[in-house]
Every structure is written in C-alpha cells, then in structure tokens.
Image 1 (tube, rainbow, N blue to C red):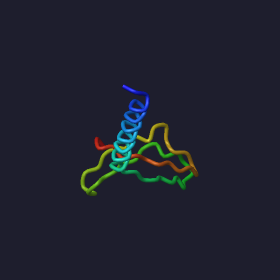
Image 2: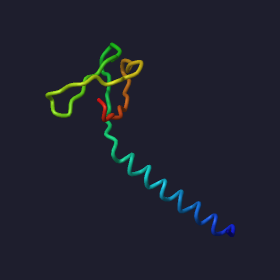
Image 3: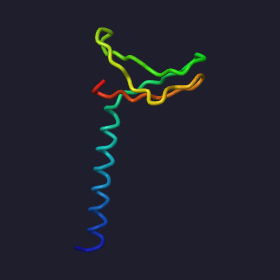
Image 4: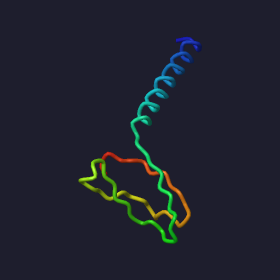
Length: 76
C-alpha cells in the first residue's frame, strides 16, 4: 500500500467519522436554564407531554444569576 493510498483512506475514515458525530449531535435536545433567583437550583423536573415528569440531573446545581445548558437524555 502506498503512502498516498494510506493517506486517502485515513482522510475518508475521518470524514465518515465526522459525519457520524454530526448526525449523533443533531439527535441531542438541549435547553438553557437561567437562574434569576437568589437561591441555587438543585433539582429540575422535565416532561415531554406535561403528563409524566422525571427528575433532571443538574449536577452540583445552578448558582444564582448563572445559566446552564442542559442536554436531554433519553433516559429522563
């Protein structure tokens, strides 16, 4: 296998990998939470249908005056 063939194959693999990552990222839903209170937000509940609610992991919380982007997980 020549060097040019090896480079071409590597570039093709990288291009396909990049497209796969882009397709996966497009499937993610996200939303932004802006904490406009004087207290830390430590718990969020989310719902797709406003009927069934689930807890959303906010980690160590969202401090007063801060914003955070939350990535929707299918298990929520």
